[in-house]
Image (cartoon, rainbow, N blue to C red):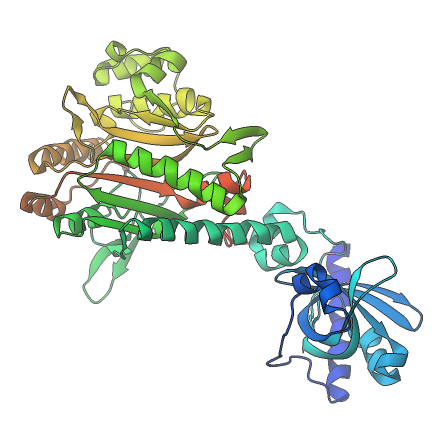
Length: 490
Protein backbone atom coordinates (compact mmCIF):
# COMPACT_ATOMS: atom_id res chain seq x y z
CA UNK A 1 0.00 0.00 0.00
CA UNK A 2 2.85 2.35 0.90
CA UNK A 3 4.53 1.56 -2.43
CA UNK A 4 1.31 2.39 -4.30
CA UNK A 5 1.02 5.68 -2.38
CA UNK A 6 4.61 6.63 -3.24
CA UNK A 7 4.01 5.76 -6.89
CA UNK A 8 0.88 7.89 -6.99
CA UNK A 9 2.72 10.80 -5.38
CA UNK A 10 5.48 10.48 -7.98
CA UNK A 11 2.97 10.37 -10.83
CA UNK A 12 1.30 13.54 -9.51
CA UNK A 13 4.70 15.21 -9.24
CA UNK A 14 5.48 14.34 -12.84
CA UNK A 15 2.07 15.53 -14.01
CA UNK A 16 2.89 18.84 -12.38
CA UNK A 17 6.16 18.99 -14.31
CA UNK A 18 4.26 18.16 -17.49
CA UNK A 19 2.07 21.22 -17.03
CA UNK A 20 5.13 23.33 -16.31
CA UNK A 21 6.78 22.12 -19.52
CA UNK A 22 3.69 23.08 -21.50
CA UNK A 23 3.48 26.50 -19.85
CA UNK A 24 7.07 27.15 -20.90
CA UNK A 25 6.01 26.55 -24.50
CA UNK A 26 7.99 23.31 -24.77
CA UNK A 27 6.57 20.19 -26.42
CA UNK A 28 6.79 17.28 -23.94
CA UNK A 29 5.94 14.64 -26.55
CA UNK A 30 8.19 15.42 -29.49
CA UNK A 31 8.23 14.27 -33.08
CA UNK A 32 10.82 13.29 -35.64
CA UNK A 33 14.42 13.59 -34.46
CA UNK A 34 17.61 13.30 -36.48
CA UNK A 35 19.77 10.67 -34.78
CA UNK A 36 23.31 10.58 -36.17
CA UNK A 37 24.97 8.20 -33.70
CA UNK A 38 24.16 5.54 -31.12
CA UNK A 39 25.39 4.91 -27.62
CA UNK A 40 27.47 2.03 -28.93
CA UNK A 41 29.07 4.31 -31.55
CA UNK A 42 30.20 6.73 -28.86
CA UNK A 43 31.53 4.04 -26.53
CA UNK A 44 33.29 1.95 -29.18
CA UNK A 45 34.62 4.84 -31.30
CA UNK A 46 35.11 7.52 -28.67
CA UNK A 47 38.62 8.52 -29.70
CA UNK A 48 37.74 8.62 -33.41
CA UNK A 49 34.66 10.77 -32.69
CA UNK A 50 36.39 13.02 -30.14
CA UNK A 51 35.46 16.65 -30.76
CA UNK A 52 32.77 15.66 -33.27
CA UNK A 53 29.25 17.01 -32.84
CA UNK A 54 26.64 14.24 -32.91
CA UNK A 55 23.01 13.74 -31.97
CA UNK A 56 21.66 10.80 -29.98
CA UNK A 57 18.26 9.88 -28.58
CA UNK A 58 17.24 7.61 -25.75
CA UNK A 59 15.89 7.18 -22.23
CA UNK A 60 17.49 8.79 -19.17
CA UNK A 61 18.32 6.15 -16.56
CA UNK A 62 20.41 8.06 -14.00
CA UNK A 63 21.28 11.60 -12.85
CA UNK A 64 24.38 12.74 -10.94
CA UNK A 65 24.31 16.46 -10.20
CA UNK A 66 27.45 18.31 -9.12
CA UNK A 67 26.66 21.99 -8.65
CA UNK A 68 26.76 23.68 -12.03
CA UNK A 69 27.33 20.43 -13.91
CA UNK A 70 25.26 17.27 -14.23
CA UNK A 71 26.14 13.81 -15.45
CA UNK A 72 23.38 11.51 -16.69
CA UNK A 73 23.09 8.11 -18.33
CA UNK A 74 21.24 7.76 -21.60
CA UNK A 75 20.24 4.33 -22.92
CA UNK A 76 19.19 3.52 -26.48
CA UNK A 77 18.72 0.26 -28.38
CA UNK A 78 22.50 -0.31 -28.47
CA UNK A 79 23.44 0.34 -24.85
CA UNK A 80 24.32 3.10 -22.38
CA UNK A 81 26.35 6.28 -22.80
CA UNK A 82 27.16 9.06 -20.35
CA UNK A 83 26.11 12.63 -21.08
CA UNK A 84 27.46 15.78 -19.42
CA UNK A 85 25.54 19.07 -19.10
CA UNK A 86 27.19 22.31 -17.95
CA UNK A 87 25.43 25.49 -16.97
CA UNK A 88 28.00 27.77 -18.61
CA UNK A 89 27.68 25.91 -21.90
CA UNK A 90 23.89 25.43 -22.05
CA UNK A 91 22.97 28.74 -20.53
CA UNK A 92 21.09 29.27 -17.28
CA UNK A 93 17.57 28.70 -18.65
CA UNK A 94 18.31 25.54 -20.65
CA UNK A 95 20.42 24.09 -17.84
CA UNK A 96 17.76 24.86 -15.26
CA UNK A 97 15.13 23.14 -17.39
CA UNK A 98 17.49 20.19 -17.80
CA UNK A 99 17.94 19.70 -14.07
CA UNK A 100 14.44 20.70 -12.91
CA UNK A 101 12.10 19.32 -15.56
CA UNK A 102 13.74 16.06 -16.56
CA UNK A 103 13.17 12.81 -14.68
CA UNK A 104 14.60 9.33 -14.88
CA UNK A 105 12.62 7.57 -17.59
CA UNK A 106 12.22 10.62 -19.84
CA UNK A 107 13.17 10.18 -23.49
CA UNK A 108 15.33 13.01 -24.84
CA UNK A 109 17.29 14.07 -27.85
CA UNK A 110 20.86 15.25 -27.19
CA UNK A 111 23.22 17.20 -29.42
CA UNK A 112 26.80 17.48 -28.24
CA UNK A 113 30.49 16.78 -28.68
CA UNK A 114 32.17 13.49 -27.87
CA UNK A 115 35.01 13.47 -25.36
CA UNK A 116 36.59 11.21 -22.79
CA UNK A 117 36.53 12.21 -19.11
CA UNK A 118 39.63 12.20 -16.90
CA UNK A 119 38.54 8.75 -15.71
CA UNK A 120 38.39 7.57 -19.30
CA UNK A 121 34.59 7.41 -19.63
CA UNK A 122 33.26 8.04 -23.19
CA UNK A 123 30.89 10.99 -22.80
CA UNK A 124 28.79 13.47 -24.79
CA UNK A 125 29.02 17.10 -23.72
CA UNK A 126 25.52 18.51 -24.20
CA UNK A 127 25.15 21.63 -26.32
CA UNK A 128 21.41 21.23 -27.05
CA UNK A 129 18.65 19.00 -25.75
CA UNK A 130 14.97 18.47 -26.40
CA UNK A 131 12.05 16.56 -24.91
CA UNK A 132 10.98 13.56 -27.00
CA UNK A 133 8.67 11.99 -24.42
CA UNK A 134 7.88 12.90 -20.81
CA UNK A 135 7.60 9.75 -18.69
CA UNK A 136 4.63 9.98 -16.31
CA UNK A 137 5.27 6.77 -14.39
CA UNK A 138 8.41 6.11 -12.35
CA UNK A 139 10.65 3.21 -13.17
CA UNK A 140 11.52 0.77 -10.35
CA UNK A 141 13.54 2.64 -7.73
CA UNK A 142 16.82 0.87 -8.37
CA UNK A 143 18.43 -0.01 -11.67
CA UNK A 144 17.68 -3.71 -12.29
CA UNK A 145 14.93 -3.18 -9.72
CA UNK A 146 12.15 -5.10 -11.48
CA UNK A 147 12.58 -8.54 -9.93
CA UNK A 148 8.92 -9.56 -9.44
CA UNK A 149 8.66 -12.33 -12.05
CA UNK A 150 4.90 -12.00 -12.50
CA UNK A 151 5.19 -8.23 -12.99
CA UNK A 152 8.09 -8.66 -15.43
CA UNK A 153 5.95 -10.81 -17.74
CA UNK A 154 2.85 -8.60 -17.43
CA UNK A 155 4.80 -5.38 -18.03
CA UNK A 156 7.46 -6.58 -20.45
CA UNK A 157 7.95 -2.99 -21.60
CA UNK A 158 9.26 -2.08 -18.13
CA UNK A 159 11.27 -5.30 -17.94
CA UNK A 160 13.03 -4.36 -21.20
CA UNK A 161 13.82 -0.89 -19.88
CA UNK A 162 15.35 -1.85 -16.55
CA UNK A 163 16.82 -5.29 -17.31
CA UNK A 164 19.07 -4.91 -20.39
CA UNK A 165 19.91 -8.64 -20.45
CA UNK A 166 16.25 -9.33 -21.28
CA UNK A 167 16.59 -7.36 -24.50
CA UNK A 168 19.68 -9.42 -25.38
CA UNK A 169 17.57 -12.61 -25.26
CA UNK A 170 15.09 -11.22 -27.77
CA UNK A 171 17.82 -9.86 -30.03
CA UNK A 172 19.25 -13.39 -30.10
CA UNK A 173 15.78 -14.79 -30.80
CA UNK A 174 15.50 -12.61 -33.89
CA UNK A 175 18.97 -13.64 -35.06
CA UNK A 176 18.12 -17.34 -34.54
CA UNK A 177 14.97 -17.07 -36.64
CA UNK A 178 16.77 -15.06 -39.34
CA UNK A 179 19.54 -17.66 -39.51
CA UNK A 180 17.05 -20.55 -39.83
CA UNK A 181 15.22 -18.84 -42.67
CA UNK A 182 18.46 -18.21 -44.56
CA UNK A 183 19.70 -21.74 -43.88
CA UNK A 184 16.56 -23.29 -45.39
CA UNK A 185 16.24 -20.77 -48.23
CA UNK A 186 19.84 -21.49 -49.27
CA UNK A 187 18.96 -25.21 -49.50
CA UNK A 188 16.04 -24.72 -51.85
CA UNK A 189 13.21 -24.80 -49.31
CA UNK A 190 10.21 -22.59 -49.98
CA UNK A 191 8.64 -20.71 -47.06
CA UNK A 192 4.84 -20.95 -47.18
CA UNK A 193 1.82 -19.91 -45.12
CA UNK A 194 -1.06 -22.23 -44.26
CA UNK A 195 -4.36 -21.49 -42.46
CA UNK A 196 -4.40 -20.60 -38.79
CA UNK A 197 -8.17 -21.02 -38.65
CA UNK A 198 -8.95 -24.63 -39.59
CA UNK A 199 -12.14 -26.66 -39.85
CA UNK A 200 -10.24 -29.78 -38.69
CA UNK A 201 -7.53 -29.37 -36.04
CA UNK A 202 -5.02 -32.03 -37.10
CA UNK A 203 -1.31 -32.73 -37.32
CA UNK A 204 -0.77 -33.33 -33.61
CA UNK A 205 -2.33 -34.84 -30.52
CA UNK A 206 -3.55 -31.82 -28.58
CA UNK A 207 -6.72 -30.05 -27.51
CA UNK A 208 -7.53 -27.07 -29.75
CA UNK A 209 -9.05 -23.68 -29.07
CA UNK A 210 -12.53 -23.47 -30.58
CA UNK A 211 -14.23 -20.41 -32.01
CA UNK A 212 -17.22 -19.82 -34.28
CA UNK A 213 -17.44 -18.35 -37.77
CA UNK A 214 -20.69 -16.43 -37.91
CA UNK A 215 -21.09 -16.11 -41.67
CA UNK A 216 -20.61 -19.85 -42.31
CA UNK A 217 -22.23 -20.79 -38.99
CA UNK A 218 -19.55 -23.38 -38.23
CA UNK A 219 -17.05 -23.99 -35.45
CA UNK A 220 -13.43 -23.51 -36.44
CA UNK A 221 -10.19 -24.17 -34.58
CA UNK A 222 -6.94 -22.36 -34.04
CA UNK A 223 -4.37 -24.69 -35.56
CA UNK A 224 -2.46 -27.05 -33.31
CA UNK A 225 0.04 -27.89 -36.09
CA UNK A 226 0.73 -27.17 -39.75
CA UNK A 227 1.75 -30.69 -40.73
CA UNK A 228 -1.24 -31.86 -42.74
CA UNK A 229 -1.38 -28.71 -44.86
CA UNK A 230 2.34 -28.86 -45.64
CA UNK A 231 1.97 -32.50 -46.69
CA UNK A 232 -0.84 -31.44 -49.03
CA UNK A 233 1.73 -29.16 -50.66
CA UNK A 234 4.06 -32.14 -51.15
CA UNK A 235 1.18 -33.81 -52.99
CA UNK A 236 0.90 -30.68 -55.13
CA UNK A 237 4.55 -30.83 -56.15
CA UNK A 238 6.17 -28.30 -53.78
CA UNK A 239 8.95 -30.70 -52.87
CA UNK A 240 10.75 -28.66 -50.18
CA UNK A 241 8.62 -26.48 -47.93
CA UNK A 242 8.72 -24.99 -44.47
CA UNK A 243 6.55 -22.79 -42.30
CA UNK A 244 7.63 -20.74 -39.32
CA UNK A 245 4.64 -19.51 -37.37
CA UNK A 246 2.26 -19.71 -34.44
CA UNK A 247 0.46 -22.79 -33.19
CA UNK A 248 -2.14 -22.84 -30.41
CA UNK A 249 -2.91 -25.60 -27.93
CA UNK A 250 -5.49 -25.44 -25.16
CA UNK A 251 -3.20 -26.87 -22.52
CA UNK A 252 -1.62 -25.99 -19.21
CA UNK A 253 1.02 -23.33 -18.67
CA UNK A 254 4.41 -24.19 -17.19
CA UNK A 255 8.11 -23.53 -17.79
CA UNK A 256 8.00 -25.42 -21.12
CA UNK A 257 4.46 -24.73 -22.35
CA UNK A 258 2.59 -21.63 -23.44
CA UNK A 259 -0.81 -21.91 -25.20
CA UNK A 260 0.52 -19.79 -28.08
CA UNK A 261 3.95 -20.83 -29.32
CA UNK A 262 6.17 -20.71 -32.40
CA UNK A 263 6.95 -23.80 -34.47
CA UNK A 264 9.15 -24.52 -37.44
CA UNK A 265 7.99 -27.39 -39.66
CA UNK A 266 10.06 -28.62 -42.60
CA UNK A 267 9.19 -31.21 -45.26
CA UNK A 268 11.51 -32.64 -47.90
CA UNK A 269 10.27 -34.95 -50.64
CA UNK A 270 12.41 -38.03 -51.31
CA UNK A 271 14.00 -37.77 -47.87
CA UNK A 272 13.32 -39.71 -44.68
CA UNK A 273 13.86 -39.39 -40.95
CA UNK A 274 17.61 -39.96 -41.40
CA UNK A 275 17.61 -36.95 -43.74
CA UNK A 276 15.87 -34.93 -41.03
CA UNK A 277 18.42 -36.00 -38.40
CA UNK A 278 21.26 -34.71 -40.54
CA UNK A 279 19.42 -31.46 -41.28
CA UNK A 280 18.47 -30.96 -37.63
CA UNK A 281 21.92 -31.41 -36.10
CA UNK A 282 23.63 -29.36 -38.81
CA UNK A 283 21.11 -26.50 -38.73
CA UNK A 284 21.06 -26.16 -34.92
CA UNK A 285 24.83 -26.45 -34.46
CA UNK A 286 25.40 -23.98 -37.32
CA UNK A 287 22.85 -21.62 -35.77
CA UNK A 288 24.64 -21.71 -32.41
CA UNK A 289 27.96 -21.01 -34.10
CA UNK A 290 26.49 -18.09 -36.06
CA UNK A 291 24.55 -16.47 -33.21
CA UNK A 292 26.74 -17.32 -30.22
CA UNK A 293 30.12 -17.78 -31.89
CA UNK A 294 30.43 -21.32 -30.48
CA UNK A 295 28.65 -24.68 -30.81
CA UNK A 296 28.81 -25.09 -27.03
CA UNK A 297 26.06 -23.78 -24.75
CA UNK A 298 25.60 -23.58 -21.00
CA UNK A 299 22.19 -24.79 -19.86
CA UNK A 300 21.03 -25.36 -16.28
CA UNK A 301 24.60 -25.66 -15.05
CA UNK A 302 25.81 -28.10 -17.68
CA UNK A 303 27.93 -27.62 -20.76
CA UNK A 304 26.38 -29.00 -23.95
CA UNK A 305 28.33 -29.44 -27.18
CA UNK A 306 26.05 -29.23 -30.23
CA UNK A 307 28.73 -30.36 -32.68
CA UNK A 308 27.46 -33.25 -34.87
CA UNK A 309 27.06 -36.17 -34.94
CA UNK A 310 24.49 -36.40 -32.15
CA UNK A 311 23.79 -39.52 -30.12
CA UNK A 312 21.10 -41.95 -31.36
CA UNK A 313 19.11 -44.16 -28.96
CA UNK A 314 16.21 -46.48 -29.79
CA UNK A 315 13.02 -46.06 -27.77
CA UNK A 316 12.84 -49.61 -26.44
CA UNK A 317 16.52 -49.63 -25.48
CA UNK A 318 15.91 -46.42 -23.54
CA UNK A 319 12.73 -47.80 -21.95
CA UNK A 320 14.58 -50.87 -20.70
CA UNK A 321 17.55 -48.83 -19.51
CA UNK A 322 15.72 -46.11 -17.55
CA UNK A 323 12.17 -47.39 -16.97
CA UNK A 324 12.92 -51.09 -16.55
CA UNK A 325 10.21 -51.94 -19.10
CA UNK A 326 11.03 -54.28 -21.99
CA UNK A 327 9.43 -54.55 -25.41
CA UNK A 328 7.58 -57.76 -24.46
CA UNK A 329 6.23 -56.17 -21.26
CA UNK A 330 4.00 -53.67 -23.08
CA UNK A 331 2.38 -55.12 -26.18
CA UNK A 332 -1.29 -54.26 -25.60
CA UNK A 333 -3.68 -52.25 -23.43
CA UNK A 334 -4.01 -55.00 -20.82
CA UNK A 335 -0.26 -55.08 -20.28
CA UNK A 336 -0.25 -51.28 -20.25
CA UNK A 337 -2.71 -51.15 -17.37
CA UNK A 338 -0.58 -53.67 -15.46
CA UNK A 339 2.61 -51.66 -16.05
CA UNK A 340 0.91 -48.44 -14.96
CA UNK A 341 -0.30 -50.14 -11.78
CA UNK A 342 3.03 -51.83 -10.98
CA UNK A 343 5.02 -48.63 -11.49
CA UNK A 344 2.39 -46.49 -9.75
CA UNK A 345 2.14 -44.15 -12.73
CA UNK A 346 -0.16 -41.18 -12.13
CA UNK A 347 -2.07 -41.28 -15.41
CA UNK A 348 -3.99 -38.18 -16.51
CA UNK A 349 -5.27 -39.97 -19.64
CA UNK A 350 -6.74 -43.49 -20.12
CA UNK A 351 -4.01 -46.15 -19.45
CA UNK A 352 -3.83 -47.42 -23.04
CA UNK A 353 -0.61 -48.76 -24.49
CA UNK A 354 0.02 -45.44 -26.26
CA UNK A 355 -0.59 -43.30 -23.18
CA UNK A 356 1.48 -45.48 -20.85
CA UNK A 357 4.39 -45.43 -23.31
CA UNK A 358 4.21 -41.63 -23.52
CA UNK A 359 4.05 -41.38 -19.71
CA UNK A 360 7.10 -43.62 -19.25
CA UNK A 361 9.07 -41.69 -21.86
CA UNK A 362 8.11 -38.37 -20.31
CA UNK A 363 8.92 -39.29 -16.71
CA UNK A 364 11.58 -42.00 -16.88
CA UNK A 365 13.50 -41.57 -20.11
CA UNK A 366 13.56 -38.01 -21.41
CA UNK A 367 15.10 -36.33 -18.31
CA UNK A 368 18.18 -38.56 -18.79
CA UNK A 369 18.88 -37.39 -22.34
CA UNK A 370 21.38 -34.67 -21.43
CA UNK A 371 23.66 -34.62 -24.46
CA UNK A 372 22.07 -33.94 -27.87
CA UNK A 373 20.17 -37.16 -28.61
CA UNK A 374 17.81 -38.54 -31.23
CA UNK A 375 15.35 -40.87 -29.48
CA UNK A 376 14.20 -43.00 -32.39
CA UNK A 377 11.88 -45.76 -33.65
CA UNK A 378 8.70 -45.06 -31.70
CA UNK A 379 5.83 -47.57 -31.49
CA UNK A 380 3.11 -47.09 -34.09
CA UNK A 381 0.48 -46.49 -31.38
CA UNK A 382 2.08 -43.14 -30.46
CA UNK A 383 2.95 -42.15 -34.04
CA UNK A 384 -0.25 -41.87 -36.12
CA UNK A 385 1.38 -39.95 -38.98
CA UNK A 386 4.75 -41.75 -39.27
CA UNK A 387 5.76 -44.50 -41.70
CA UNK A 388 6.22 -48.03 -40.33
CA UNK A 389 9.68 -49.60 -40.28
CA UNK A 390 9.72 -52.28 -43.01
CA UNK A 391 11.57 -54.82 -40.83
CA UNK A 392 9.43 -54.20 -37.72
CA UNK A 393 6.01 -52.80 -38.68
CA UNK A 394 4.84 -52.17 -35.11
CA UNK A 395 7.53 -49.48 -34.91
CA UNK A 396 7.85 -46.29 -36.97
CA UNK A 397 10.69 -44.33 -38.53
CA UNK A 398 10.23 -41.49 -36.09
CA UNK A 399 12.50 -39.61 -33.71
CA UNK A 400 12.27 -36.89 -31.14
CA UNK A 401 15.33 -34.75 -30.46
CA UNK A 402 16.42 -33.89 -26.91
CA UNK A 403 19.08 -31.61 -25.48
CA UNK A 404 19.68 -31.18 -21.74
CA UNK A 405 16.69 -33.43 -21.04
CA UNK A 406 14.31 -31.16 -22.96
CA UNK A 407 12.49 -31.99 -26.18
CA UNK A 408 13.30 -29.69 -29.09
CA UNK A 409 11.52 -31.40 -31.95
CA UNK A 410 9.70 -34.33 -33.50
CA UNK A 411 10.31 -35.90 -36.91
CA UNK A 412 9.61 -38.91 -39.06
CA UNK A 413 9.56 -40.55 -42.40
CA UNK A 414 6.13 -39.39 -43.46
CA UNK A 415 3.35 -41.93 -43.89
CA UNK A 416 2.23 -41.73 -47.53
CA UNK A 417 0.12 -44.91 -47.64
CA UNK A 418 -3.51 -43.68 -47.61
CA UNK A 419 -4.87 -47.10 -46.59
CA UNK A 420 -2.59 -47.37 -43.55
CA UNK A 421 -3.27 -43.72 -42.69
CA UNK A 422 -7.02 -44.31 -42.75
CA UNK A 423 -6.62 -47.28 -40.40
CA UNK A 424 -4.53 -45.12 -38.02
CA UNK A 425 -7.20 -42.41 -38.03
CA UNK A 426 -9.82 -45.02 -37.19
CA UNK A 427 -7.73 -46.12 -34.18
CA UNK A 428 -7.38 -42.49 -33.09
CA UNK A 429 -11.14 -42.00 -33.43
CA UNK A 430 -11.66 -45.04 -31.19
CA UNK A 431 -9.34 -43.47 -28.59
CA UNK A 432 -11.32 -40.23 -28.73
CA UNK A 433 -14.52 -42.18 -28.17
CA UNK A 434 -12.93 -43.67 -25.06
CA UNK A 435 -12.39 -40.18 -23.66
CA UNK A 436 -8.96 -39.21 -24.98
CA UNK A 437 -9.64 -35.60 -26.04
CA UNK A 438 -6.12 -35.21 -27.44
CA UNK A 439 -6.30 -38.15 -29.86
CA UNK A 440 -5.85 -37.20 -33.51
CA UNK A 441 -9.02 -36.20 -35.36
CA UNK A 442 -10.20 -37.89 -38.56
CA UNK A 443 -9.33 -35.74 -41.59
CA UNK A 444 -11.06 -37.06 -44.72
CA UNK A 445 -9.69 -34.36 -47.04
CA UNK A 446 -6.13 -35.21 -46.03
CA UNK A 447 -6.80 -38.84 -46.89
CA UNK A 448 -8.13 -37.70 -50.27
CA UNK A 449 -4.88 -35.81 -50.84
CA UNK A 450 -2.83 -38.91 -49.99
CA UNK A 451 -4.90 -40.94 -52.44
CA UNK A 452 -3.66 -38.66 -55.23
CA UNK A 453 -0.14 -39.67 -54.23
CA UNK A 454 2.40 -38.05 -51.90
CA UNK A 455 6.10 -38.67 -52.57
CA UNK A 456 8.10 -40.34 -49.80
CA UNK A 457 9.36 -37.57 -47.55
CA UNK A 458 10.99 -36.65 -44.29
CA UNK A 459 9.50 -34.02 -42.03
CA UNK A 460 10.44 -32.33 -38.77
CA UNK A 461 8.89 -29.87 -36.36
CA UNK A 462 11.15 -27.84 -34.06
CA UNK A 463 9.90 -25.70 -31.20
CA UNK A 464 11.44 -22.28 -31.78
CA UNK A 465 10.74 -21.10 -28.24
CA UNK A 466 12.53 -24.12 -26.78
CA UNK A 467 15.44 -23.68 -29.18
CA UNK A 468 15.77 -20.06 -28.08
CA UNK A 469 15.64 -21.22 -24.45
CA UNK A 470 18.56 -23.56 -25.11
CA UNK A 471 20.69 -21.04 -26.99
CA UNK A 472 20.10 -18.24 -24.44
CA UNK A 473 20.28 -20.35 -21.28
CA UNK A 474 16.69 -19.48 -20.37
CA UNK A 475 14.93 -21.94 -18.06
CA UNK A 476 11.36 -20.76 -18.63
CA UNK A 477 9.51 -20.40 -21.93
CA UNK A 478 8.10 -17.12 -20.60
CA UNK A 479 11.61 -15.67 -20.70
CA UNK A 480 11.77 -16.07 -24.49
CA UNK A 481 8.22 -14.97 -25.38
CA UNK A 482 7.77 -11.23 -25.28
CA UNK A 483 4.19 -11.36 -24.04
CA UNK A 484 3.41 -14.80 -22.57
CA UNK A 485 -0.12 -15.82 -21.59
CA UNK A 486 -1.00 -14.61 -18.09
CA UNK A 487 -4.09 -14.95 -15.95
CA UNK A 488 -5.86 -11.56 -15.94
CA UNK A 489 -5.56 -9.59 -12.73
CA UNK A 490 -8.76 -9.74 -10.70
